[in-house]
Image 1: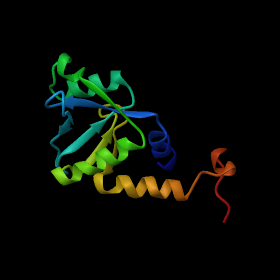
Image 2: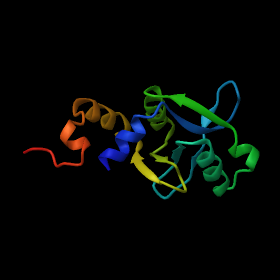
Image 3: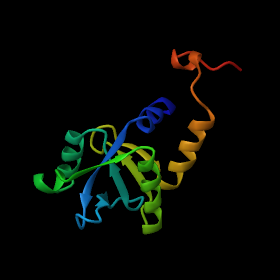
Image 4: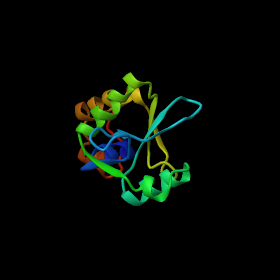
Length: 127
């Protein structure tokens, strides 16, 4: 999973389905047994598909905002103050889940533990 999350954190931006006022949009979230989950996407097509799978109209699911990284990580993490409990990347396809409280620690851990050449090639780390 480390490699998948590194790829997600290494993107230029995350996409979110915009909700609310155009001047102050919020990100679309779903109700889940684990609490409210905000949905982030890697492509516009996945965002539209994920939104429509949750009952949004094609027009609603097409209201996509791009949030550049690394700011997208902090923005998503700040949603914990509003009760969001997790983030799902590419809902309906990848379904990569993280508790919202883990977003910043994951970023910090990856920064402190860069991938070395041997791990990039699929080799086990020395030790």
